[in-house]
Image 1 (tube, rainbow, N blue to C red):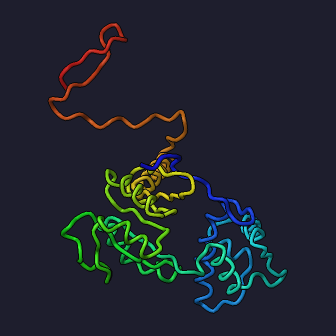
Image 2 (image 1 turned 45 degrees about the vertical axis):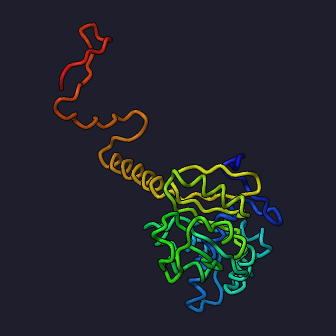
Image 3 (image 1 turned 90 degrees about the vertical axis):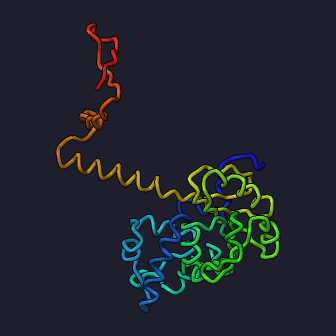
Length: 259
């Protein structure tokens, strides 16, 4: 079983910070949209707004790539697309395997953006024998018994885990043992991997909970009840027959009474 940290910060070429690496795909998406509209050049302010960052941060990020733009002209869109794609490793073909072909895994398999961004779904893998041979997005599903052979035959270094939480670590261990060094984890659990393996976690429920926090905060602002001193909302009423706690006659001993 793999041991070690849950993830490690990769050593980037030319000392590009992780925060900058995380923003490069945002710039690439904005630049690709401009390229599709045949826009030849773009200012740092326009590109920063399209990517959702401030222009000073964008110029700093691009300085790590050795790209400074031209005063009065801006950045060459096509050159930046190439430059960022090369830095991200997208100028080559990356074979990817997806393990766990339930609703989420099938949706990922059908996602058309992989091929246009330098990734090729080399195989779909599932533990259910009934799934074996069934085509999903035109690719026949293969059983997990074949996982190691599939990794070796396709030279796969990137694996996507879309299994239930209980199976994710075992799948992760097998992927790593077979030679996979980068994992995108959609399972709702934290994976433990050895040094030399990168894990990126995508947890939709956590993102929704964060949005719920902001919605609650906005609702509190509308009613004027925000901040550390605000009164928390009352808990939901208990159903009949469930015991409720209250303070006893002396004010500090809880007494239990029927609700």
